[in-house]
Length: 187
Image 1 (cartoon, rainbow, N blue to C red):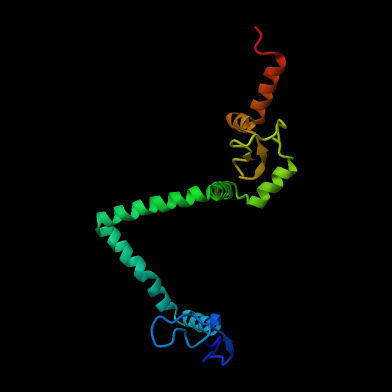
Image 2 (image 1 turned 90 degrees about the vertical axis):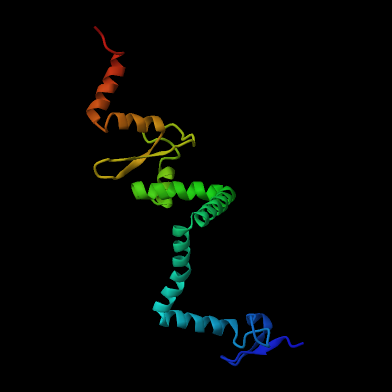
């Protein structure tokens, strides 16, 4: 049994593993090697963008029409999506948590994961106000200027709540400090 075959496109003699299987015809392997077939396919995709678009939409349009007209098909699709989605999320719990979290951070504050890590390193894993080490449950929280949107630092939950309830107003924070320093209201 031969171990090599000559490609009809490039004319090179290559191992049989370099040829894709043929679905019909007398030969079990395609006449052109994988490299030549890939190049041909790529050229066709680049030269025929309208055809490519139609090919991509064909299945989507049929599926969408079926899901819109058949409640049974929609129910089957939703049930399968729930099962497969849940299975994937269970298997990739860390990815889901990490990408979901950093996707939200990026959308809300414009911070990338690298910028997040840099800020944590700068703060040595501690709150920028009280210096407490971050516990991990919902911490650290991103402190940002609500007017400009600029990120100021990472805070523990308590310090973030303190700033939020004071509406980032230094006078309220100073009044609170004075109140605590004086021992409370004296009459």
